[in-house]
Structure formats: C-alpha cells, structure tokens
Length: 281
Image 1 (cartoon, rainbow, N blue to C red):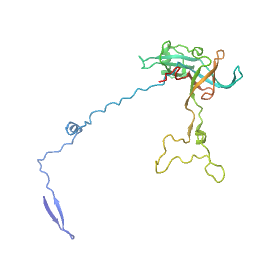
Image 2 (cartoon, rainbow, N blue to C red):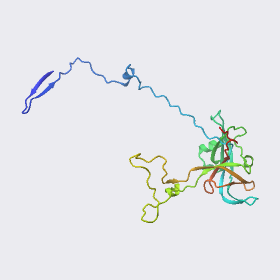
Image 3 (tube, rainbow, N blue to C red):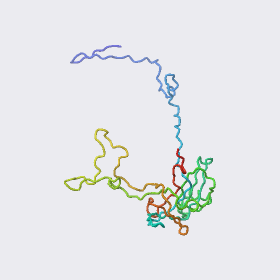
Image 4 (tube, one colour):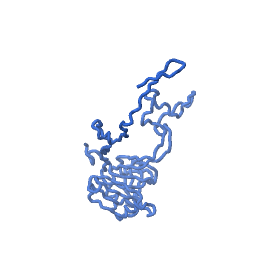
C-alpha cells in the first residue's frame, strides 16, 4: 500500500491507495439459497415446507330431540280453566317439516337430520338447491336446518314430521329465531344506560361519556358497551311451556314471548333439562 501526499493550501492530507487484485483472482459467484441449506453451519433448512397445523374438531351442540320449524303469528291472552291469564305466542305451520337428508357418522362424521320447511316455487331456488332436494325426492322448500341428535334410527328422506307425535301440551321447548332489528341505537336504548341531568347547566344529556383512561391503558377495552347496531341477531328462549295444541287450526300456543316479528321463522326443539334429557356431567 502506497501513501501519496496531495498538495493543498491547508494541512497535509494523506490518501491511501490500495492495489487492485490480480487478474488471476477467483471470480465470485452469487450465493444461492441451496448452498446455504447444504452447509453444516446452516442448521435450519429454508427449503422445507412447514408442517400443517392440526385443527381441532369442531363440536356442535346436541339437541335433546328432533324439532320442527314454524311461523310466528302473534301474541294473545289465554285463559286457563282455573281463570289464570297467560300471555302466549301463537305459532303456525306452513307446508313442510319434511326430512330432506339423514346424516350418519359413517357418511358425514356425525348424526343429524336435515329438515325442510315452507314450500316455494321452483324458480325461487337455485339449481344446486333443487338438485339437493330432487336427490331425496322432496318438494321445493325454502328453509333447511339440521337437528343433531344422538341416534337417527327411524328417520328417512321425504318423511313428514307430525307435531302431535313430537310434542304434547305441557311440554317444555326451546325456541330460537331472529330478533327484530332496531338499527343503529345509542347507549341508553341499547344497553339501558342512565342519562345525565337535563337542567342546571348540564351539557351531557344522552352522551356516552368516558370510555376509558388516557395514558394507562391508553386504549378502549374490547367488548366495551357503546352505541351500535341493535337487534337482528339469533336468540334462543329456553324452557317455554306449550299451553295448547290445536290440530284443526294447525297452531301451537307457547307461553311467553318469542323472538322476531309476526311472520318470522322459528325453530322449536325439546328443552334441554339437566338430569332429564342431558346428563349432569
């Protein structure tokens, strides 16, 4: 290595000149990922694909028995023979409640009965839906729901479910449906918050107020009750009593209020009672 002094008006500046490599030097090749992976110093191979993650099996909720679907007609007052006034909801039944498919552990991995409800025109369904129903020889049906039960013995496709054979007066049932949608609502209507004072100079009447601290934690906790869309969700009302079954009118009267407005689809199943049809463990 040589040192050269460059002339300048200021202090002496030394520049170092490095000799160029000889022409006979080995040419450098770009390193590939394969060369690294084959090296003993490279412990982990980047070419190996990661092992697939095992997904745990999804467990569905078992029903206490086969159920049916109905249509909410409205509410009324019912007088028992003893004179007691009972608020009831009247549920009607359109054409349907036909078994469309029977699933077993051998074919699908679990036992379930698929039921169809409410007959419609052919053009109201898609071709895949029509093909699924024609495979079992069933008429076109709008709604299809599954009832997962312990055993599917005694059920076959195109079998009609009779209300009188499944339920009787005095039985307890679980009814699920879609609640009435209320749209975007504030905290007072949605979560029953209290409002602020309306007088004495208060400027906070129906506002939400503080939703958390500042520096710590410096964020809003998940699940915080705030304004948002209210209603329009699935809701199940458990252990409702069947007051009366009218075979001539094809209706059933159930004690209490049921989710949804008149005309809403309802799913009626035997009530789950621990110690009776569900083991205590």
